[in-house]
Image (cartoon, rainbow, N blue to C red):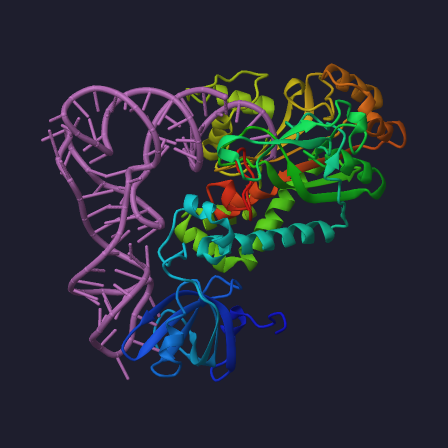
Length: 474
RNA sequence: UGCCGCAUAGCUCAGUCGGUAGAGCAGCUGACUGUUAAUCAGCGGGUCGUAGGUUCGAGUCCUACUGCGGCAGCCA
């Protein structure tokens, strides 16, 4: 056997009379007196192939093994389907069963299971309609991301996953160390399991693998900046890690981030790219993922297609933070957290702006310096910085970006007033010392984007295997 | 981390006032020449998350724990 070159997706496009082999997993089987029907899926497309097995064509004992979840191959002929529901179907002549799935033990069934239950059997989720559709859209979206940047002259930079710099204080970091050794097997309930107690081999980080404390990256931005100031336009697309104890439907400890960084680009250019980017990626998904999106629109989020088409067609609203505060103050809505200039916007405020007031994505700019990171460029007023957040209905902040502070003295002052030491940033400051350039960039959570385009409500259901506090199974 | 909610059959759930366990689907047996989450008849399937407590009696009330979920904070 070679790898598959013909998928069920291709069989739907083939002419009646074509001899074909259909490999896949059985979704359901329906038996009648003289004929059986099998719904077969290989994950290549949303639609299942209907296989028709007339009586005595394959041995009854063999056919009985083709239960939900079993892996099989049907050989036969593509014929026009006499019934509604599909244009063509496969009239079976032979059946091979590769792997049975004992119906008494196989946890998936044709009737829907809850997303919570599916998370417990994440290794089997790909067999289901919803998660199969999610993963096809995820793959398509990743391709669209690369296509967008590559076609505009951006270079793909793989920034390190292990880092020794506590970048921006973007969040709690995971330590990376070999400075541990097994102490004692744990007593009690963990006895005999792989659970063990550890102790430090050395109290000095100098004796650790990297000779200093090391962490999993929380962002590739600072490294991306170094490459933008040399290659002009770059982007990263890779995993990032946050050890925050956040247990919500929008947070993961391991997630994928997209971070473009552009030299000779100010905040207006940054906003233009962000808007262009979202429209292009969503446009590609609408075009090439139509069948899967149709499913999401029907079963997950009824307003999905309408919203996505609206995003692609209409210009994003652009407001300064100060203007947004004024709108919120005059809204007559009693928010749980009161609004005044200088406070960070809460979820309820973002949702009101984007869902109630504007009704489409909103870009907010020029936030107070105190509530934003040190690397964002200070405005003339000395109070606000050139930051921008793209807020989307349903999920809130989807993109955060800024024009970076390119002036050495100003940047040094900002680092110090943030309570950070200059030393670890010597290389980041070098960028301003030698050949500094105005530059901008933004960060985008890939899973947040997927939630937006699929309508899925929990971020754990748009990533193959989720990592959250207290859970790292599979 | 805080607040709230949930935990009953393989799955999705119901269970009234505290009185001794129910349905649909799945499974098994059979019926039906074309089904589309097929349909119809019959059968099997439960330590009601765990540990205590109140009570003559607890799936139901109380406490703790565990797990899961939602919201908030933090953020992407």
